[in-house]
Length: 464
Image (tube, rainbow, N blue to C red; front, side, top):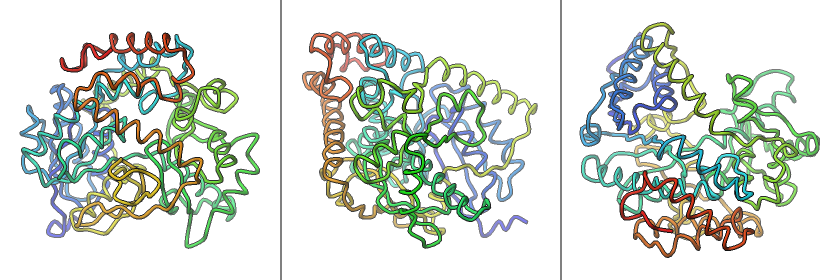
């Protein structure tokens, strides 16, 4: 029964509405949800993709457990934003072909990257492409939906969430990342092993998060009111050498090869610093010099994800989307592992929600500079997204995190101010680049800028 009068109305603008990942995932989540009455406006520079997703969304709406969401493809960003309560941003800065250059050029200089979208040379150049894009979106939100709550899903998460706040200081924006789900699944597994039955999921596990995106840690873990830190420490001790294989549920073997992990990097960081790492090994490894983990990924139980796999996976997702649109595949009302629905419900006046998000530092992380984007827990409610105090990182680890955070802040300023002279020194300081001779680092930087110049705004061209 649809108790329509009790539904929470919400207007959602989805920027990047032709997405084959987050947009279609949101459709299944909305179909599963019983609380929201959602009007979803899809905007994408590829309008045909937004139109396709409108049809897919309508098919999901037909199997809704609650009030069916409505979907509209908008031709302009302003049209999508006008009157929106919530804005979701999920874009690909450039293309996978651009990302392939972000990986291939550094590899030719002896720098392997497992992901290449957050730090390292790949994350740096991706940020050069993406910051102007997010700045444009922030200006549009300021003009057309200044009171909306804004969720950024796009990487590099820290830099781009910072862009939104720098361009529109009054914005109510947070960055959303699901990497912390990995350690929560791990704790649920430990608890289920203890009970001998599949009683718990990651949703039952509470962790207190601190750090910066993709270099996150947890200083408290609980489940059913129990402190699970001793159990985690025992688990790490038992698997320190062999690792513990972890993949995303519902994925095929090839996906597991390229995105799975044995958690050996996380376990080693726990040995070194005495605090559990929350993100996956592929991301964690890129924050440290190549000689520590990336030089031998097989030994550390992870794989360098090739972009050609991402391209093939995108084509499979596109084919599935076309089959969904044509009615060859039945849509499902399905609850994903993401927390976006719970967050929206809380912001619209429903039940409060607590989860990890990326926000400007207002004291929640005393180890890092004020204003820098940090990842900690926050409370979602009608009042907005309010960060919770995260405590302290171990001193040596805090120094590593602070260096990355400061470099991300400086990169954002340099791009927004078109300070070309500041870019190469920042690029040069990254731990993956630092061991290179200066001439090699300069040559790599010049090649990467040339490869991505077609995506850069005019004022950023010639930055080398």
